[in-house]
Length: 212
Image (cartoon, rainbow, N blue to C red; front, side, top):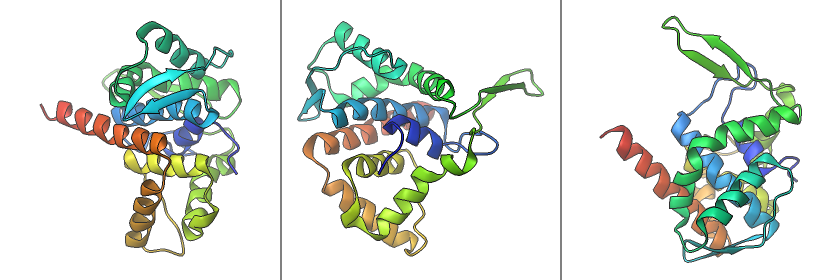
């Protein structure tokens, strides 16, 4: 059973729990966290998705910085747009918002340093390294027992896989893990599956831009 919000768990998985270094590119992380922020509303039943488009919402601002930013953008932009456009729209600001929420909850520390060239580098080491590994450990365990997956963990696995975060299951080979993840994604509810596919589209667009 998940202990943290979807985006918080993905954030932990994307960072080294000791150094706080991100394991994937910043753009990939932003795409994943944007999808996870939308996923939190899907899991709460306050966001409606149809055929890959945001069809409506009942979500309200709650004082949660991530939720409130998504709701504010929903109110400003409105329904009817493709989910991959929403992921691209939320991507620039969502990493800082999730980090702010997690720091406020005592889950991570924000540390800054200067590189040799004078660039500011930000890291997010976990306040509790063992606790930070729980999402990845849980997914690895569940991949060995796929019938025990809950909706939150299934969506987390799909989003983590979508941004290139490796999930290790000690009892399975890498090929078996890939097969299980593919099977899980096929079994997602339609709206969750739409979100995972939209993340793939957003990630592909970012990759194209980086090579342009």
